[in-house]
Image (cartoon, rainbow, N blue to C red; front, side, top):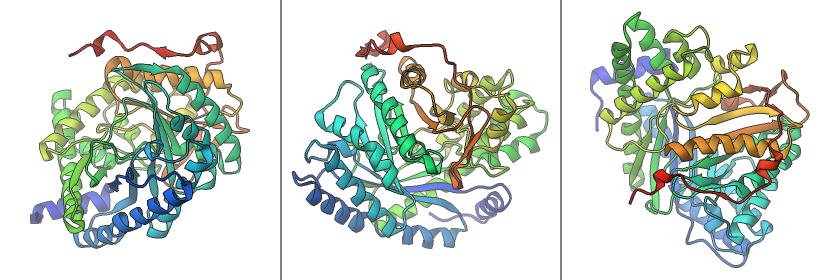
Length: 453
């Protein structure tokens, strides 16, 4: 597929003036054929397959992006949920696989790998428990590895025991990575209704219903949308939605063209474009700035949830006109530490955790890159996570929590991660006890709306 002259000029303008990039090209790889009862042998098989299958991608992406004049921020891998790779159901066994994945990714020049994952929305296997127990050490001793747990779904309800295990794991991970701002927690996310084709981290994994190998792209472009809104001036909301749709169309089209060319060059199927607006800490590349360009004094003001709902819907409508391969999460991300306007709003007190929770009912995912005081109890963390996952379960949407209980930090302080992960102000968490509730444990039943057959 070739660009027209007009498309080339539009892309160059977006790239140079509006902070546009393709946030990620992600290669999904099935590792289900790499299992072995000897974890070291399983690790060798995983390493060999990743090098063989994913190794060409960084070079192919570099060649194509240079020819097209497009920036790609990250090259990533998504692997099968590692708890499904057959080996001994012991934490040490999965650590051997974690290190093999990380070594392969670093040697090949990938930025992140997702898929150190357990799917426990309706209960645990022994392998799931072993994998979750291994996560603190895996996240604290590897560089590229990202991890996730799916603890609920609209079909099965919420596994509260899994949320409690995750809260314990996060506290341990925060301590083990305390010298880097509890960075290990930033590489973990807990989901309800996780999707199989998400190219974004930390929650990417290669679903069992996907091809052996597949290429996904995840676009960005808050700056493109923001500039389009500013150029439109004081138009009404229907006209503003059309402006956002047209901008989303252009962004998505670039992502599809790039992804298909990479897939063709590698001789593997093309999967999806995730058209979520993904911000960075850089000024001009912020979903919060988009909301403020729509007319809010500051993100967190009354009207924020309504503006975000319209933005998310318009982005999706524009994207589906550009490609029939929309997937992943698709909409708008609101990670606090990765968005300059959100950081500013949180520091000023305009944006609270309660307002963020309300916003997650209409955005792509959920409470993302939120830092809370390091002394928060496991019970409070459990309740905090459960609230967010319940929103997704009841509303049949993906929700998630990426929370950093920043070791040694208090409300009003900040924790810095650098790069795309940015800097997170430590936000106030309600300290009213939920201990008696979360200690009940068990499975919160699925909502009545799950009975759809």
